View (cartoon, rainbow, N blue to C red):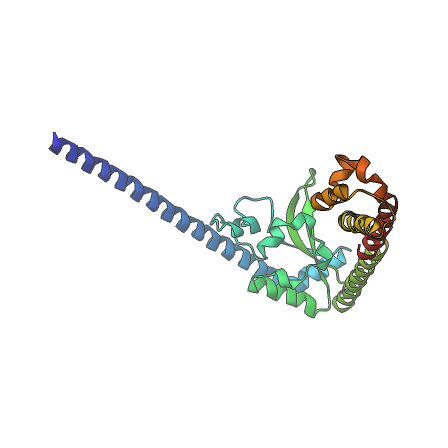
Length: 282
């Protein structure tokens, strides 16, 4: 019986090892296939952009002759296999398409102001050559997108309009950006001065109440004892002894009739003192 158990264990281990080996082999094959697809995608893209560089002058003049700006498609965003910033963060190797720009642009393209996109998003050397070629001819390469009927973004492309000077457009955008930043700083400053936040108001109220209650307790207790000590109100020694031993505000609730007269002077003064300190500190 023991030999049968050992044989069964060996068979089971062999099966498990083969299964694990097959899984590892599939992962290696899949990763290799994706790398090959990405390399092929990069080759296709590089050749395409190099062709745009070689034919740039003729295509630009032809577009201008047609009364249009030259449009150069850079990346299709409606395809599978694009690597997003989310996937990079989670370390997922699922990219099969070559992305010549930073993946964050792909992820957040819907929320990006394309007017302020520059060449710092480019990670491909050939695309950088094309971008520099446009700039060197004093033309501003404007990033734009195309959308389908449903409003979904399909492609990211460069629009080359020879009527827009690169230097003038860059300077205008720089000034506009600085103006917007200064306006935002001034707005935030005015809001902080004119409109205190609800949390700060609540904090001030809490501080006021805490200081008021604390000062009221001690001030009334001390003033009550002093009222009796200087003889403003007559009272039996037994009562005041019990009062001092147990302390205020016990007698306000349990035995107020024996000590109530002591508060005729101490309570109003205690409230005034407490209001003063609470207002000053808060």
